[in-house]
Image 1 (cartoon, helix red, strand yellow):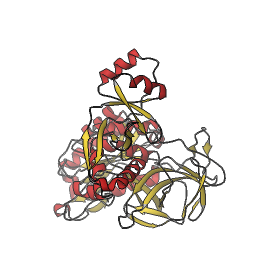
Image 2 (tube, rainbow, N blue to C red; image 1 turned 135 degrees about the vertical axis):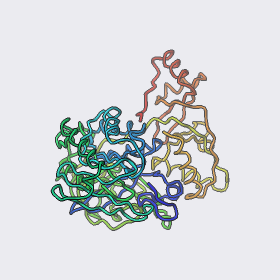
Image 3 (cartoon, rainbow, N blue to C red; image 1 turned 60 degrees about the horizontal axis):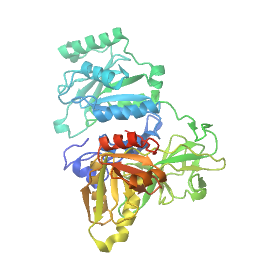
Image 4 (cartoon, one colour; image 1 turned 180 degrees about the vertical axis):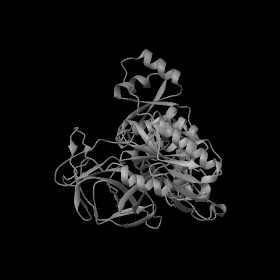
Length: 481
């Protein structure tokens, strides 16, 4: 979301490119307190091109909130990300946004969620008024009416007045009220009521209506998170054993971000605490390297703002500063060893050659590519015989290339040129497969920094033909979004 460009932008959109375009490009953490409950909100991009970043963030979440535009309903990327939630058994709340603008009818939006997502929506609040002529919401649990009062050009937060079920109010004489009551009664008859057990099982999604830009309806959503969302639970290790919440400290890194503070050029690893008590200054073991890591500089985060984190508990997100030895998927532990499952890399669908246009900044070019790959902005592939002369960037969506180029030029000071390739599909192969592929013209095999060999094909027809003609060659699918 973004209001008038010269007035304000979203707190979680801290990158210059996000503020320029008015879209979320990278996920971030917003830690805050609501009614005595500490919440760690992991705000993610909604654009499909950044779904891999969203997937990584979902690995650290106990509950997800699906935000739908009332004018658009369920979009393609929403369907794909819901499948991620379903695979992870993540409970889902739904917030239907922008009710203060023209949009689809509420019942139509519920049908859209049911038909396209495959989950039963159970409205907790119900809108009064037509889309674009939004009057407020009825809290179906108590029968109270939360009245929405529009402000000029959305310049300030909308006023919210709560009218209890037994109180008289002029709105009750309005036809829009009568229709809302009739629709709510229809939902009662259909049994579309909040059910906590089915919500936690991922079978239903409680639905809230409002306008996030005006902050209307958001309080009711936050109340529901504090009341209904599941508490942190034991996390399974690589071996399948659950790590008890009261075991010694452990956590895993789900995101790495550089240059959040341009003045210091720092690098932050976002750590989800899984068990025990995090203590700033303690030394943990990195399960991947078996080397000690001093957790001396730790922050709680609210977008780009930070405050020192002295202690943290399961469910908390901690930003570890200058964590140059930590990568996405790393596990940290104290005393009792544990290693959590790695976070999969998604199958790239777009490929571009990146060239350094300033020979004098070759070292910066190499270092910046390493940094972007470690953050998961793009995958960096290299021809075995060319090294860093013509690396190939691989991404889920083409907008990732724009982000990579913008950051290379503006954060690292490296002017680059991007050139699209003809590749459209990638498969994992091995050394024997690389030799077989090298003898033909069906594909090129490039290497990733983690040692993986990726066979890139110029058409799906060529891929299918090669698989048919060479059934013994290893060609594994990469996780798809």
